[in-house]
Length: 421
Image (cartoon, rainbow, N blue to C red; front, side, top):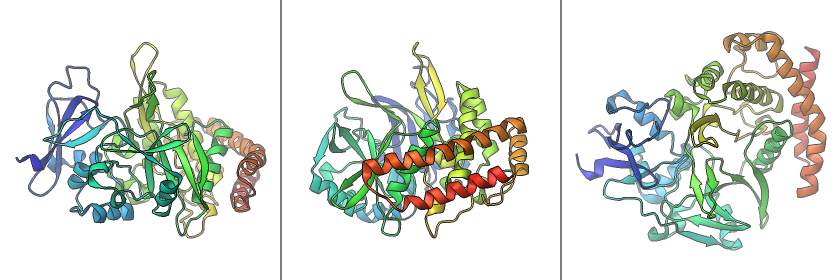
């Protein structure tokens, strides 16, 4: 097997394992023999530690690592800009240096340099980046080009923030924030995501830290990465994480339940099984799904949930449900399917979900129906109480934003349905 058909997986300066592709292009994975006895962690719930290999023919390694990559037109732009074959393996080799979580993927003939180099972005650079909707590869010379990969179908760009200064990572240097820009057909998307996320925080859901910013006449959302922390020396460090498609062994093309992806009950059982604080995290998960129904976020799929690897005060490893992200009132946006990514008791239309559907979901998750019904009512009451004040706070900070009326109407309608039923 040539070096061109192998990649190494690293966690900082330690080699975690090796990826390879067979003659048909399928990807396999094995852990490094020194990673396991050295206290290394399992990359995934679906890739448990062991001395064997996850053969390409099994597909599990291919699905896990492909889930690190962009999707759809975002992927097509990168393939075109870098003039790459459109394969998972070639993309991982080209842009796998800075991914979600703590891992870096490098060609077999390279080791992590340990150097952290960043290119400062001026306001003009940032405006140009916004105009390109975060597409970075065609705009930078090869020697300064970052190797950044973020999953998903939306344009976004990882950066490092120090105060208000924005830096573009070079090579495998870690980022600290993600920027999401306006789209031609969805101009309000950054504002909607910011407002929806801040509304979720107002009713005590654990969410990412998000802020709406403006460069020129363009708005963008700036999101602090929950899988990055700052150490005492002022350097950003990576934390490992995986999304629920990765943890459950699904490919990104099955992130929606409708297309063969996991059900909400499967996600619930995963959290019960792996969380270090399952009683807390499963309740957060239930409230997330209730919020999605009431706040109009129909795009809450399995890749919008993640597990985060932490350590407690004594240095012992912990696994927790990650803060919620990608919260958008999609029902306020025309031309987006209003059906829920996860059904509620077999029903995906949020307009007709009844107490019977919530009861069915409770039984699927082995939760007392009365307990879930109370959570639904409490969430509806909290949303009705907070929507007005949160909009006032948002507009005091960003100016009048009439388009938020659409979100208010969606939430008011959904909460009224709860009250009637």
